[in-house]
View 1 (cartoon, rainbow, N blue to C red):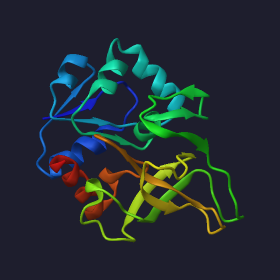
View 2: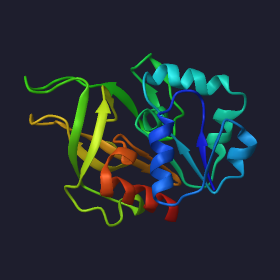
View 3: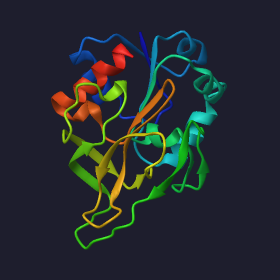
Length: 200
């Protein structure tokens, strides 16, 4: 059973629809007890990362529960950003799982837009979450903040055509994983990411 963390800051409908399409069983909960007993945990997120962290911390015992998990955990978009050390969005401390800080996108070329929205290819794929995903597969992104390249980067995408325009598309550390893109909105390749998560 997948526990989807409900802290009033996630795009839950698209996530649950995608899990239904691949035949996964899930429950929506903010209970640390339920989450601690789950086989896998999914941390969705949309909107303002600092506010999302505050909402999560308003749920008694939830932060400690997430940090103590030893089952596979997947953060999506803001969910991934929350798992980093710090975010510039709201100048808030993150959960500290991934050893990087979330920064605001800074356009390097006139064509660079904030937010970064639409389909982008991913590359430099590493690890079990990316198994079977072809290099250059397209994923759907919607974000104004990003995780820089770091030792926990398991996939990259190009935000800008300028030199240095690569950012982390996905992160992984031990049993924790995160995607800046939305696998639930990324067609067959995104569904493969979710299927890989079920097999971790």
